Image (tube, rainbow over the protein chains, first blue to last red):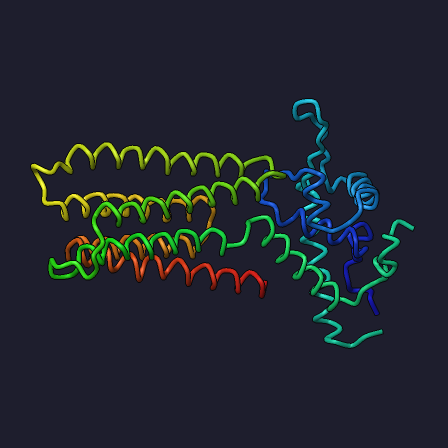
Length: 106
Length: 217
């Protein structure tokens, strides 16, 4: 039944991580966002967001850059090129599923 | 396991429809919050132009007779006061929306902001050099300042549109440029009227339209 379809990327196919990736994808390429800014945009707890970011980093989808502003440590996050294209593939796969299923649910 | 305890359903599988809706909603929301509320950019300037050029128009009148007892000094105080408030507000909004962002767009924003400063220093120097009371009528001095300033505003909107790839901004630049040319040809009173009603009013309308579009996603 699903033989002809692309597999959905399991790293992205989890609601919370999908929201993280979508949000990072909204940044223009070449920009990074500070951790507190991303947390506010998503309305997640810091701990929860960290867990998801680590998974995304392991997959090579996000780049986590730790630096200092004055004496305060700041973490900047950006989607990698690989992350961007994984998200494009994921969206394309979802659209394919929608067209094929045409509203028919399992 | 890694779901938020407050939202236990966070990692439940979604149907493709739900997933696509989530992507669209989250993407619109993120873009809206990253770029800032268009109303906050357009309304201060819309109000400043409407009030400031409105006061100038009442001072000039269309046939050389003022429509209200507003002196040039009062009209200019309204215009510059309102523009100073709008500028402070714009700087505050753009600094606030960019606090958490580093990278290319920060550089673009800084260079674009400097374009306005350098440009208006030039406008000030050129207009005060040529706008001398022994050379020009008071109305013509006012029109010189207004038309050269609006020339710069129109061009910077079009150039800014190219930097940020925003078509609405480009069309605003074109509209301001056209208004400015028509108004300059017609004279100081008409120029102030057009800039107040169509320019200021146009900014107010643009703010509302862009915000609605952002909310729809």
